[in-house]
Image 1 (spheres, rainbow over the protein chains, first blue to last red):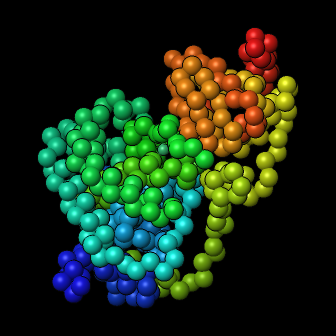
Image 2: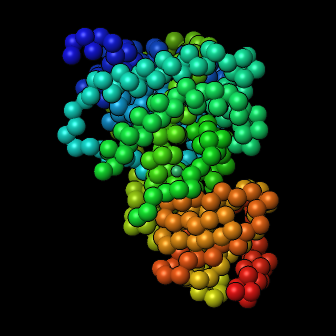
Image 3: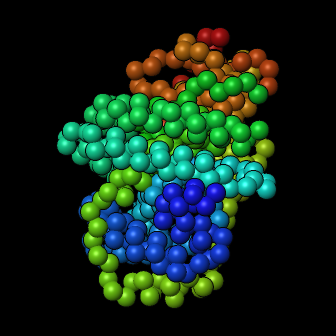
Length: 186
Length: 211
Ligand SMILES: [Zn+2]
């Protein structure tokens, strides 16, 4: 167990400390890691630095307040924060409330499953490898798509190939996720 | 409940995750994902990809006082936003669009009813109530049209759509969906067409007279 614990990423460990113990030091560590990335990410959509900072503040506050919803068995911290960032960005810019799916009912009394958490993290590692194998123009398209700069039509017209490449890499992950989610539903 | 067989294409899930999908379609996508583990897993894979890009993005230093400001706000009482969850046949995103209220049905004739959830110049999203055997009204779309079944089922030239199934049609698809005999079919329909009431009813009645 202790060996497994070492392998779980710092970000996940910090996020769990925030979720379970409202640990401010862990929150500061998350802030130091993610705030500059979020600012860079948001500024790439054309936001000014002050506006990007306003959104980063909002995102990190949401991370603190909604920490109870973080589930390391299903998402790595970066994926969870990515979705919060896109949602908050849109809520703030368009002044609308983004429709979000119902939360999955939590499995009552489920013990944290370190091997499942690790599997999710390894998935993230595979994704990074898949991303680094893309040609520069494919990579740029993917970035545009996930920064919200392409319509669904442009994504299906232009990024079919990179999406396909990435999808084949994460197929196993998808299967596993599906299995896991079915388990949660039943 | 039979298994969901009609899902959301990847490009649309990616656009939803990234927030580039227009609001009315996002209501339909979030509603389908609420009902479908297959698309939820696929959406989470897209979020993972977004997360990987976020991790690798070039960092830009934040202002020196930002962290201290934020820490000071952590304990401030937050006004909780209302959380809308599934109610009966309606998934959370539909309940949210209804602001927690019951749908206000308006008759379109021949037993067909609709309840508009929201509309603007980019399109609309509405609930449709179609008695068994009746045609689903033509939403009058120019581009993309999404129809998610919440109760009953309908069939058209492309197949049968039961609870949880979503039909995603573009303007090229000439189809006449008809509610299957039995329970009334209730579905959520998102389209980019502005509502045209005057044109809507006669167009709706046309296929009915042909039945
Ligand atoms: Zn699906």
